[in-house]
Amino acid sequence: MKVLVINAGSSSLKYQLIDMEHETLLAKGLCERIGIDGKFTYKPQVAGKETVNAADYAMPSHVEAIDAVLNALADPKNGVVASMDEIDAVGHRVVHGGKEFAASCLITEESIEGIKKCFPLAPLHNPANLLGIDACRKAMPGKPQVAVFDTAFHMTMPPQAYIYAIPYEYYEKDDVRRYGFHGTSHRYVSARCRELLGNPEHSRIISCHLGNGSSLAAVQDGKSVETTMGLGPLAGVPMGTRCGDIDATILEYLMGRYGWDMKEMMNVLNKKSGVLGISGVSSDFRDLESAAQEGNARAQLALDKFCYEVKKDIGAYAAAMGGVDAIVFTAGVGENGSTTRAAICQGLEYMGVKLCEKRNNERADEHLISTDDSPVKVYVIATNEELMIARDTAALV
Ligand code: AMP
Image 1 (cartoon, rainbow, N blue to C red):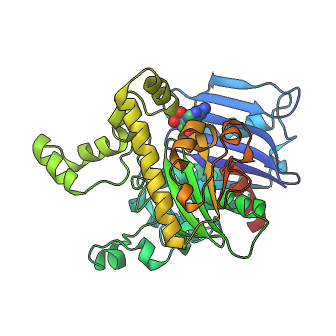
Image 2: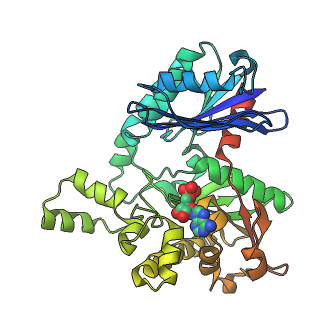
């Protein structure tokens, strides 16, 4: 079975074609600037086929973007399938599943209504995800499609973890609760970590997805029991440009002082905060590390703040689960930032975390970075959300 995986944003669309027989990636790429000037990238993973890099391609909407993808995949010269018929199913990333979706599902008229119901919870993401779904339905009528939700994995959280301490009616009437995100990534790396631990009956894993957006999840016996993001992805640890958890009083105070409306305030918290906000240098961890090495104190403070908050959440999640068997680092910073990983684990020796400096400085998609005698195992596991989406799609279809 060949599965096309689609991650549609408002003006971009990422895709991968995966052959599920051996889970091999056949091609991947990106449509950018949809509705603007259209740039198309196609990277076949089969020997002898040529890449297309950010080529001009008219894409007034997601429909033309999907056409570009299908044409490239079935191109007689550089394609990886003989025709579109070889694509058996399509899997879509959908950001918010609200209370509606606790698992991936086949796309039907009913599930589309469910995705629409979640629009108010993710007004930027869900409508864009649906554009990708609609475009595929137009281009490939009758082809089975599956929605995989970022929030679904966290629907196993107990009420004490997901309820906010505001009047209960807002939970009942307005669905205000912690949902959490990066669920597909946390699910993938925590499942892989359980395998590496030898599939024990009981396991307590802290999954740290640290990238431009960051979140942690406490995964007990394969189920998410707590996570740092909330109703939306602004909560938790500081991120590239997002503030993470802050005191709500700050909003009232700054809005009063500067006369901002809520939109302006949210723009500051989403786009100008996080490690960018503290450092004034960059949202990119590589830039921050270079600046800090050159003596930029605010870049160092931003890194210190990030590591401190991640460390605090690791401690909190160990408390929530009554201990921890393994910690996993994944995503851009988690997979590549050895200095950041070391700073996070430093001082956690009291709870049984012994990082091996040599292993931590080595590079691999998947490896143990704690010492052999460390009571808590620490792993780097490269995330693969697309593969998880493809697996769910294949299983449901
Ligand atoms: P992601 O959102 O998962 O793509 O992660 C992006 C983040 O990973 C950016 O802040 C990058 O600076 C960071 N990153 C990528 N490579 C490295 C590296 N070698 N060292 C530190 N951070 C890195």
